[in-house]
Length: 244
Image (cartoon, rainbow, N blue to C red; front, top):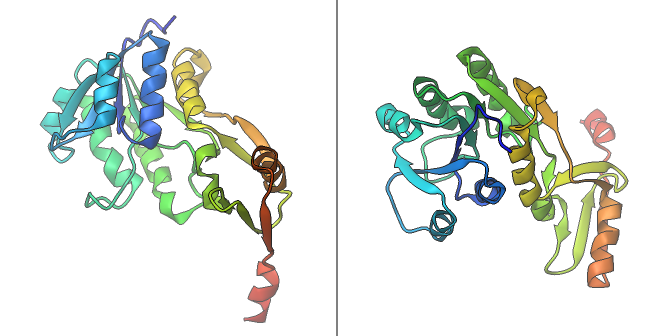
């Protein structure tokens, strides 16, 4: 059963890697009307076709045209942002790309905004530090909000040293450090469930599909593939800095 105050959910970036998983989760749940907000120009997109075939409404807007965004968001109760910055846009960060969405959401009387937070926590990486700035704007907007922190995406463990194709692992640091990770489908499910829990209103929720160390993940890969070559690269950053 859906929360009675939320009927229609719009996912911005709903055909992207994470956005598609979130879109599918809402459609599979079946409790909400689902809209997928895509940037103009309109173009052929297989994921958009698949989502439309499952009942999603695909809407387009120029993010630089507030009137178009407001029109696209009319009737939306919850806006989920799964957008990211890329080379196709003139946008350089999460604040710039989400600010037009926030302004339009407020004018369109959207009730809750779930920003693009998920894997990266504000303040721990310079690329996403402007998420803090966006949080401040969101909290001043008067809209409800929920921040969802999921740890690393399990599908992207190769970013931290696992070469799945060549069955090699390179560890930069302590292989016993615990990591929080969540699969994309589970992130979608957690996002859906967040609308059904009253305590998520104006709050941050921290979730994780697994909490394992690099060595423990390596063992999982070995169990599946039968072999893995490991390169251990340990950096003594404090010592090196003292030598400069």
